[in-house]
Length: 426
Image (cartoon, rainbow, N blue to C red; front, side, top):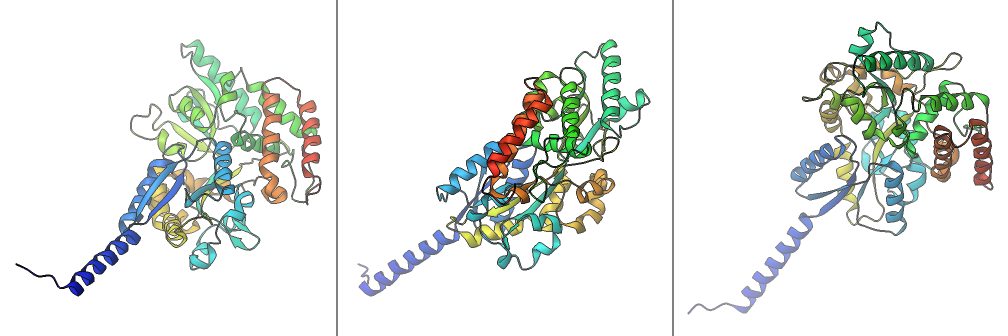
């Protein structure tokens, strides 16, 4: 009969308990919320799982709503409750000021990595001296067009909105007469959400109509140039754009364009790789250009992009920060550029030959990013979401024919003045 020494048995039990505890610590799970527009979710999972395998931990990728407004509302709800359900948040370029109080300062852990990203993005993500998010990918509005159709009708890439309207109407009419009854001239993001703010800001700035709230705090929406821009856009609905465009987000407009049912599309760079993928009916027939401008104005592309931030309520802040630094590294940003045409936020990658061969427009349209127009987040601070909500609703009313541009902008100005009372902008 084998006898067990009590001390040895106790030591063994203690050792097993410590080993189990070590395994439990080793197998920490980090939860990251990623967007799901286009290939976002797929590529996020790929990179997060690669980090987990390398670091010896686990990740859980949580899908977020496509609609940016819905996603922000969800994040605000979770953070306001002090929830630890998500460790890492994918946040829009317009949100650092809104969410900053709930996000960790990443700079002490970054080891200077932030200096490799576009300074404008780092500045955008720095709130009261704290780097609350690390840039992940850049965005700017672009014009996608059917090269084959412009060549067929011997038309140039439109340089102004008026030229776009004329070319869209000409091609749409001729193609429909030839039997292509489902073709539309121009698709864009017309639903009442943040994407409409981006579109309408481009129309406004390119017409010289201002940026909603100017850097000095002045509310600039009530002016004839913005009114003219909205009137022009409203004229597209039901003529060169389907009435359903008033319910389109990024994916709805991409779906129409990629199915071969539109001549022009306003969208973000991610649409390039999907349109060029195997099985796409328009593969090899897509062109990309800066968005049109207007005589007396200039071409304007709304600055977009996403960053990764760590919640102050995370139970694993160190590991969550390590995941963020990995996900925003040069290697991962290059992989995302090659696989999904996501624009890096690291300037050095714009000299990478592999990236430029896969995404020729990244080199040709680099100016679109350096000259992109920022939404008025700095001027409006924590009230930006309210300002944007008021702006997109006023714009949607005009596009839907419920109000004239002049009436809508007068009412918008009054609402923004009420919203700003007591704040640092006027």
